[in-house]
Amino acid sequence: MQDLNTSKSVSYPLLSVHTLTADKYQWIIRPTLVFVVTRLIVFVAAYLAEVAIPTLSQEGYYHVNPNNVFLDVWARWDSGFYLSIVERGYFFEVGQQSSVAFFPLYPLLTGIFTPFVGSTLAAGVLVSNLALLIALIFLYLLTEFEFDRETATRTIFYIAAFPSAFFFSAVYTESTFLMFAVGTMYFARQKLWAWAAIFGMLTAASRIVGVMMFGIVGLEWLHTHGWTLTTIYRKEAWRNLVNGLKNDWANLSILFLIPLGLLSYMIFLNNNFGDPLAFSTIQSAWGREQVGPIMVIYRDLAAFFGGDLLRGEVWYHIPINLGAFFAVVFSLIAIWRRLGEHYALFCVLGIFIPVWSGSMSMVRYVLVLFPFFMMLGWWGKNTMLDRTLNITFSVFLGIFTAIFVNWIFIA
Image (cartoon, rainbow, N blue to C red):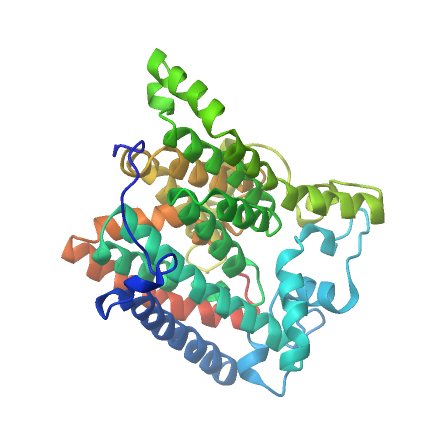
């Protein structure tokens, strides 16, 4: 594992404008190119899928803007909840799927942009794609800091071309969450604690798992002062911690802003619906039960192999979601050893919190686990692996996009 006690002395464009030489512009050129290429794939795939395949029009399969295919295809499934929050506010009905399950930051940003673009749908698509571009820039800078430029380039392409990466352009919160989560880690690694706290607070207002950034950034602060989980048995580590508390308590205090992203939403829910945990209470309406990952995996495998493969009567999304889950699980040791326990903890919580109640949508939850893609970028030094991932991801990105826009559940 790298020495996390030693901060690299690296100057980045976001922090030092005077370093913007021709070579330094790569921090924005490469993410922009990746953004353009991958968004071209998903927008073309979405358009062709909508016009070439008869779309579903039964009750429940809504079309927000049937007169504009390029926009309409990005409002599917949970998108309706986000759009309704912007237009009509939150609602909560016990035992029924309710909008309180969806955290407020993405709808808030969408609402801010709506007056400028003329419609809620257009604003949602704009926010998602703009957030993705910024997220790719942050992820490029963070990965270059931890590894090198070429690894950073591969990393941002892998995550933007991942088979479920069409969610980054849809009216979903994935792009917003990724932008603030990566930004939080980037600023924490730069020891810019105030910015890390602000971005962490916004991450916690994006999704329930966002509050874990409090612990992630806290671990980074501990690393800065010579305390890590691997040195917990050393007296020196504890002496370093005591000195850090004495000399750097102000920055540590700032980090307590992060949980406010979640707490503010809980206060809102309590004031309006009398249940500060309404976002959790309502999860049963989506068929989620807290049965644990072992039971979830067993149940899913039984359902998959209990189907008729020859007749096509199978739950095709089960191997997709479980495959994404185990891909992250098998990479955890490498993430811990190469990037540190705080990166690994981010991935652990990011997959085990949702899988405790079901594997449904796991391929979407994995999408925002950026340390996993950083490791893929590192392993992508192998030319054969790099080509395989590039081709496989790009092909399935187009296929999954077509499935999504035609109202077939993918995640």
